[in-house]
Image (cartoon, rainbow, N blue to C red; front, side):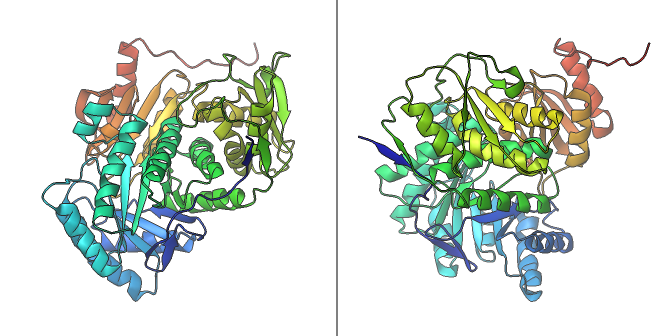
Length: 500
Ligand code: SF4
């Protein structure tokens, strides 16, 4: 029997808090997160106002300890006193008491099932407060911080993430509390997409319709961070999955909002229906490459590859139907024309159009046909598309956290310095993380880690092993490079010689 592919949102129930409605027929909302120390009320309020002025619907603050938890009340009073009605979320990692303190003041509380105790009735008490005050909850699972017992049973897999989320969702359902949003973030786009799709399947089996918050963690900065986010978020939105989103960038948080809006607006413009004879040759929840051909960019095309050009406003489904309906097993290059002279927009749109097919192993090449961009810019975007989809690594992969109130050093400047010295090491993944509490877990499968361990001090990792502890940041990049050299994984950048 044939199947019709078209863009339509998955049915979810509505979750309401502070005048924001997430899920149901409501537009996809856009959020960001402050990176000021939350205990610094004045700076945090100023940053929330600035993010809200960029058009964010929801702003999240970290509340990692008692001081930060106590700062939430004056922050809320100051914001509401100034007439700022943007919904405020407190991000809790470890302490149920802080979650309860936060639920008494903010509009939504995010807890991480990986480190939130489920015994002793803490969740019931938290839900009781949320119910009384009309506060929403987010069950925010992170690939890098699963509970030990889940990790021991499933490893750090999408299945483990789903088990972790479902455990909490079932508890919420038992308590008849539906004001809940759920997320399944990872810095690995393939893990992230598969985890959300598996979660949707699991929820459907149990008749759950919780709305979903989308995000790729530690996406990094610049065009790279935008492409990585748009590949992961775009792949899910094309499926109709996603009711609210955050683009996490290692930049000023205000920068995240216009990128989020661009993604939301672009997906809303998808029209057209495409018939597929059968979905048999494709699995949405495990990676299976259609061919063994090398993933390529347009300048590398050989006659072996078949170029598929999409013309509709829904290229993802147009390509998918064409690939799945065809008996031609040649590797496929996705080609689409973008009449735009803005590199950022072309990067985000092409990532949203092509990312899903690349993540699903249905295509082997990309051709971003953008006459207004230079050949160098196009090549850059195309290589980043393949890297963000984890098909081909052509440059160092940076797993950089977006920073928050816990960040212990100037992460934006440091990331730029680390990139300037290491970006030629194409087989390496380097984690650049703001704090030791979550950084080591969330830098996932990085080969090396640069992690803030106390103010202006850094701990360096090789994989998950600590190599140097708490060294001053002024020496930390040199030490990182020394470790890479000692491991035999360093080479000097290629130098161009001009003249004689
Ligand atoms: S890793 Fe980065 S974003 Fe995550 S809690 Fe630490 S400083 Fe904040």
